Length: 116
Image (cartoon, rainbow, N blue to C red):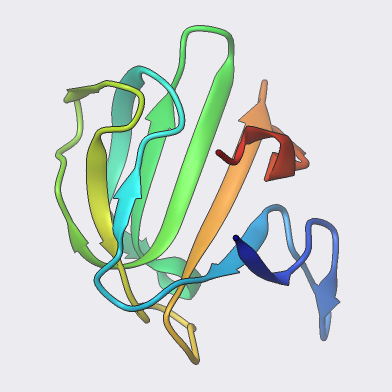
C-alpha cells in the first residue's frame, strides 16, 4: 500500500506540488516507471536533492527526487522496474520519502495512475 503524503497540485506555502510525495523507508529501491534514457542524475535541484529524470519514448519525462543514493548516470538506458536510486531525505525533505513527477511535453500530469 502506497502512502501519499503530499498530493498532486497541493500547495505548501506558495509552492505547488507538480508531483506526489510518497512516504517510504530510507534506502528503499526507487525503480524506473517505464523504459527510457536518464537525462539528469545529480543534486543540482536544491529542493529535491539527489534527483533522477528519465525521458521516455512518448514525450513523457519522469522525475524521482529526495534520493539518498543514485544508481544511474546521465545518458544511461534504463528498463521499466530497474533500480535507479535509493530513497532518502535529500534536498528539503523532512522525512524519508520519494518525490515522483510525470511530465507530458513538459506539462505536469497527475502521476498516481503510473504507480504500480
